Image (cartoon, rainbow, N blue to C red):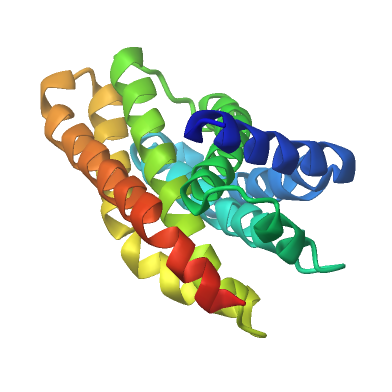
Amino acid sequence: MSLVREALLVAGKDLRIEARSRVTLAQIVPFGGIVVLLFAFALDPARGNLPRVAPGLFWVAVLLAALMALSRSFAVEARNSARDGLRLSGLDGSAVFLGKAMAVAAQLVALETVLGTLVVLLYDVHVSAWSVVLLSAVAATAGLAATGTLFGVLAAGSRRRETLLPLLLLPVVTPVMLGATRAFEAGLEGAPSEAWRWIGLLVLFAVLYLSAGVLAFDALWEEAE
């Protein structure tokens, strides 16, 4: 069985679990929406602050909601020795990493679509360069999913995984938050030429952590047992 096919099997398994539990729909997406609404109320729209700070607030809301999705990615296998069953299935560790990252990325895409719509409606945002915004969102999502999956397996074996994962992940994803915010700002302001260096940073980050996950996930998974 090829690596891609194994990864798709793992991703499909995780997405089916989420579809049946409806945690993403009932908890993660509403949580992100509440964060966006709170920022809208906290800042004074009359002063024109919302459009200016919208990119940063959007990615902060995505990151906070993503932490919940990443915790779920490994928590669903903590019961009934499901993690042992996955290991005994004979799947390659790299395929498990890629599959879990793909499942998390799919959830983030759905989350970003909802939150992006809310930001456009509530923050009076006008997008000047859609290609820049979409490309930076894809690169940032890949980076978040890969990094979160890699650090998620490190926290999975700890009894304090719910609090350990944010402590491990938040400092590492700072380049993603910075690059995505600056690229979004350039896309909203109609200055795509200023966005490419930030998109390059996002792509480099995603490639780096995808490569690290493919190479190291199997060993980290062993240590997490």
